[in-house]
Length: 329
Image 1 (cartoon, rainbow, N blue to C red):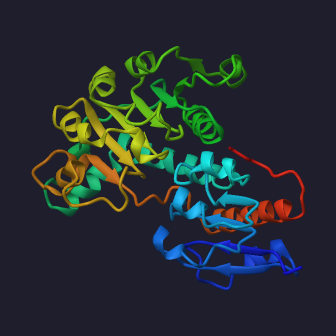
Image 2 (tube, rainbow, N blue to C red):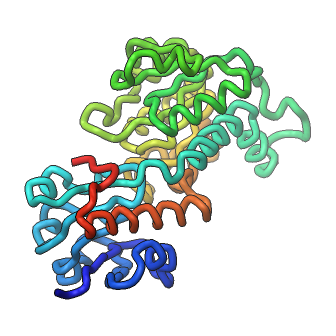
C-alpha cells in the first residue's frame, strides 16, 4: 500500500514543521502554494486528505479527488468549500473553529477602542495636519462604561468579545437565534429577540456570525438606520455579512461615527468598491472614520501554528479511521 498523502493547497511554502510534527512518519506531505483553484488541476487527485486555506474548493475541484477521506478548512469559516458535494462524494468537511478565539476577540475590542476613543481618527487628522494638537481633535467622545455593545452571533469569539467588553464596564446584549436559552443568564448578558431589537439599543455593534444565505448582507441600510445616531460598527466575521455599499452614506450623515472592518466581501477589494472609494477620498467623512485591516484579526504566530497543527491532526485522525472532529457536512 502506498503511503497516505496529505496535500496543503495554499498559503504554505515553508518547511512545514508543524504539519510534519503532527503527522509523524509514514505520511507524505505536499504543499502546492496555489493561488487559485485552477492551479490544483493534476496535483490533488491522489490526496488522501486535503488542507485548504484561502483557495476555494468547488464541485469541479472536489470531483478530481479519487480517494480523499477528509477536507480540512484551516480556519473558522468554511463557505469556500462545497461541503454538500463533498458529502455526496463521501468526503468529510471539517474545520478548525478554536485556534484564534483570543486573537479575533482582541482585534474586535481593539477596533472598538480605536474608534470609540478616537485613536484612529485623531491620529489620521494629526498626520494629515487637519487639526491642532488638542484633545478636541476627536471630540465629542463618550465614556464606554454603561454603553451597550451589541453582539451578533454568540459563538466562541462572540462570547470572548462580550466578556472583554464587560470587563470595560459595558453592558452587552446579543442576538443569536441558534443559541440555547440561558446563556444570557450564565454570562450576565441581555438577549435580544430580533436583530432589529438589538440594533435599536446598541451604541456599538460587533459581528461574530458565519456567512450563510441567512446572514449575507444582513447588516444593510435598514439595519444601520435603526442604530442610535453616532454609533459604531465592527466586523471581524465575514465581509459578506455587511452591505458595505451602505456604509459610506451612513458615515456621511452621522448615523455611524466610526466603522472598523477586518473583512470585506471581496478581498483584496477593487478600487471601484464604493467603500474603498470613500475611504481613499480625503473629502469624504469615511476617509478618517473607517478603519480597515487586511483580514488579519486571526493572526498571531501562536494562532497560526495552532491552526496548522490542529488541521494536520484532523487529517491524521481521518487517515487512522478515527472519529473526525468538527465535521460540518
